[in-house]
Image 1 (cartoon, rainbow over the protein chains, first blue to last red):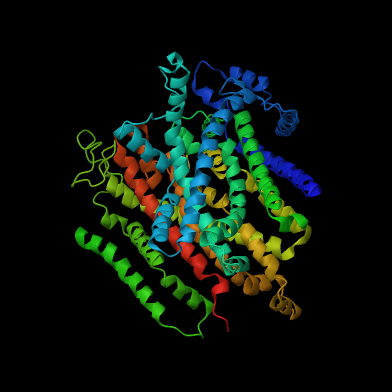
Image 2: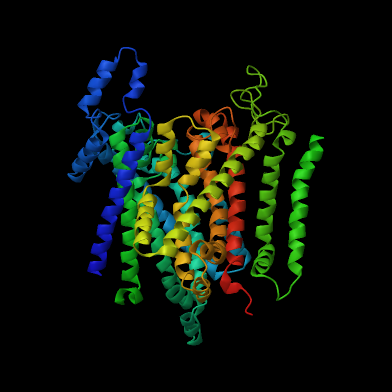
Length: 323
Length: 314
């Protein structure tokens, strides 16, 4: 097992390195650079632009820039963000906790709701309940994330006026409130983005969980349990559900990158200052160092999610542990 | 005239789908696996509704100019007919430039469906070719090719697309198709590679080789036809995914450009004032949900129908 993990870790490092190299080439092939937008300002002469480029070593040959970047990144230095006017590390340190909060709550809710719904459906296989829940989850599963966010915003914030429309806290009053009121304000701001996200992901989890349960329901050990006279409830919870949670691990691994990577659209619509919004802003302002950092983090998370799923799988399934 | 056209749009696909549904009655054990799969598909009522919806949207796309009450880019009257809420004259309202939103949605189905369809064809072709080569030749070539796929899949697709589109600036429809297709084939290549890896060791594949068939012929005539089922399912589900991606990029203003209408960029016209111009976000979004749902239902149905475990034993 330890050797397996070590080998996978090495492979992951190679994958992240490849992804970073690919992105570096891609963004430097594109026309323009972080300072080309400033050329529209007539007071910024070509000489000033050249000075800026020299200051950030953007005038060096590409291979040199590349090796410089790799060397700095390996030391943990992601460089300086042109659009945020501070180090990339500082920008990331602000955004990551916000995304972690939003996605942590949303993913826990999604998996809890999705697993329960999927299990209910599988138990009532073929009935009106199963078909209705299946139709509803398919409906939500087919929605674009930004559209769900827009409609939630319209209904609950604009038309009903129940919830704040965006941001993490009240822009005016937050600083004057006491601790209890502040927590309440933060919770209220969380509701809409979390709910938008949960609608989509829990629908996906429910669909997955239902088919995993149905795969298990035909297995020999389930028939054995029934033949021994176990109650239906015991068969479903102890035998089917427990085994059907195994494939969910794969889904957890796939969802892992969202935890820190966030969602570009939902964060943008609810003005949530997290990683998704940071990523979109970085790309729009051609902020090379920030784009690179966001992509590298994304690729690390995807690799980590895959590795995590494999390890968890081996941990949960004794048949895999032995081999 | 227009009423007759609308009637045809709804009824004509329904008749075709019902005819399809009737064909499921005929049964014979000597049918090909494809015919059998097709009948299983037609037995599912949800799939029939999905097929009908797809047919309706396809008709929208094909006959857009005859169905839309106005040309999609016509400014009706910028000072009096702009930002009108839905009414009997303009069922989906009008946008800030006084264009009829219903007409734009109908014409948008051309762009949104067309881009998704072409991009899926491109990515399926690329993914199949790449996966087939990696799986058939195996060994070191395979592991190098698949590590590259691992790396490509580890970059979040939305970020990759945003980076390409934002850095290269204004894009044409053709570029949209290319960009979406070129970033969408990694998953398909994994599916095909896994299949080919198994199939190349089958006796009939070895027999073909023994008879002196060359590699391209074995791949094309013998192995690839057997990988079709999962690829068809992936393609069907992929169309829904691409419609959502295209809409998202256009919503951010980085996909389909004005004045061409796509479902995503109609929403972008209303993105600055969601609260007051809600009809610009709600109606195109509903179209997307219905279309994607239809493709998902049919994709799920295809997965069940093409499952080889359910073919009749000889």
